[in-house]
Image 1 (cartoon, chains in turn orange, red):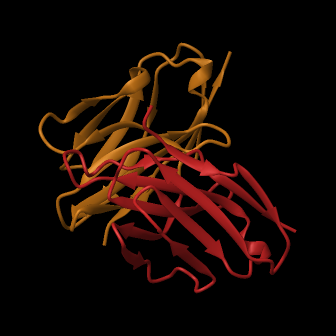
Image 2 (cartoon, rainbow over the protein chains, first blue to last red):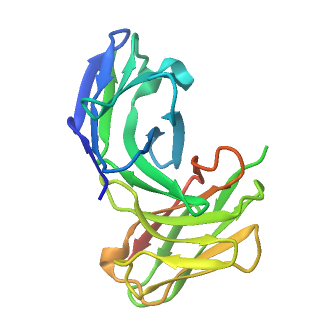
Length: 115
Length: 114
């Protein structure tokens, strides 16, 4: 069975500071990894994804994540955050078969950027 | 722009009164999903359609049903809503053609049960 653990439920940070949101996963098979962002009362927007290849993945809004197979981690980073990055961030794992993928989400990390 | 649309954005219903939530897509994707997201929790998959094939998650209550009359539309029916069904309901789509691993989400419908 697959599972995702987001190690921090809340991360407060000052504007223009760097941030890292941590995600660990467990799976017995090859997986795809995702980070989604959810702004208040909105749906989920894909930030970035890892399917294969380079372990450093760059996404939208200046975010990037690094896949570490030995540590089963997929941490999300941004070198300098803005107030507008305040949102809920979800890490997810999936395995793709039969034409669809089932996403298993972590519990989410609430990023609060303060001026 | 191609997108996933959910109507209404907010829905209020009474305890036990059937309610239907709507999702439409202009992406022409084969797969449509319904998720339930309770306050401060992760989205939880209820079921999905691959074309007309319906796939229910094992722990989805019988109270939740779905219909997909065509490629573009998918409905979530809650037969007898309880207070515990108050949540955000998210619709998503994906396609097995090139990049099928990515799901595209609508803005969600927030359901309030009185």
